[in-house]
Length: 171
Image 1 (cartoon, rainbow, N blue to C red):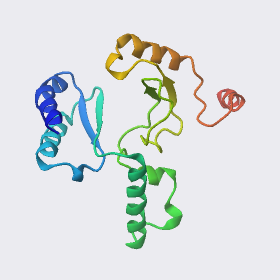
Image 2 (image 1 turned 120 degrees about the horizontal axis):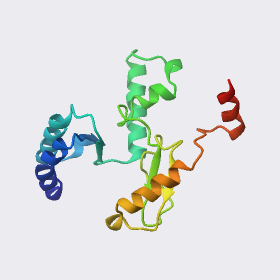
Image 3 (image 1 turned 90 degrees about the vertical axis):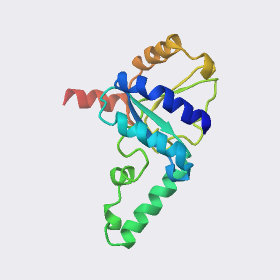
């Protein structure tokens, strides 16, 4: 937590200057008060920035996120704020920690790992995955460009087959 506080305090000026918006996801209530306060100040300071969004996942696990969303939906149903028939994918997504974020288009997995590791399990449903043997500390601009070039060659089908996409383009 000391490293996190040190980094936020030292980097928030640069994030703000570069128009980066800081966003937090996870069970933030589980964090100690001092680092949480520093993080929240960073979020508030950068909330109007319109460039990149830096998402920090803290005290985060995707299975926990899904369970928290399920519990909150169940509470809303029990309190009469929701009807069971109103629950669909869009509504469920609004109960996730990432409710204000788009689903990722590309997941870059470093160090040759070929798993998602309890990370954004719901949100990764149609995400393209790029695996590189390069370890995270060595991942640089060249590796990022390689991942992007690979991604650009792919056909994004979102669960459809190529023929369905071709038909939709004709219509």
